[in-house]
Image (cartoon, rainbow, N blue to C red; front, top):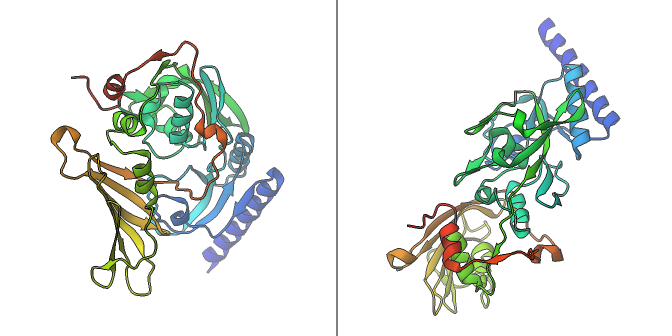
Length: 365
């Protein structure tokens, strides 16, 4: 009984400290959140406290204040591929999800915060003709997570382009030269308890450009999937022109097939009282390769796994691609810069064959 009372008093003191730190530094401190709400795998129990800074300076100050107060904390980025148990987590989670801001480009350099999406950074860099991280585009998560583990793919590693890393030390933002960090295979010299805040990357410029390429040809060269812009829209959204409502052809009580203009949509539900959801799309374009998309692992009404395969295609044209979707946002307004590309004056041409052979994972022979 005495031990329970002491533990309760310790917890109450800790909670007051956390509330005071959050109020003093102007950051959100939330209770009752679960790891299942914050991770892509959607599993994990309740967390005592989730602290949400929005700037690198706030994150550094929070980490310093918690350490000074002797309060245990752990960092969480976007929550990609994090597996947490279903028990109570009796510590503070310092989430870097909102410490993202904007990627700031200056010539061949880019300064980016730890909470910034790594795939988005790869796209931002490619639009400016910068290279060195394009192979990392398929890695889910944030820049901070990529820095911590020296993320890499297709012969590229983020550590090779890091000029400096910003870390939290003594409650302040400190810049550490990339040359002082050990970048090993999926491991770095960062220590437990260090909080990564952001980095400056030095990216080599790729000044080759493909002009007047058809969208289907470009997508086929870059990703190995020869879909037109319209087919790509159908694949990612499940929306097909001329198809509306779940009437269609019944295939049992919980399946419907809707057909229109070479497109078949397969809808299913888990019971009469459950909503319909997209299970598969089959597309047979008049002058292209037939293909099929399967949607799996639905969470909150959205699929998290998409498998794209060709149908009846010869060996050289066949494809089988599985995509894992995370950090999905819907109905997001796209600003004009999304559709613009900066073309350097010194750019030289590249052909579709050269682009196809330069794709990560493709050998010229």
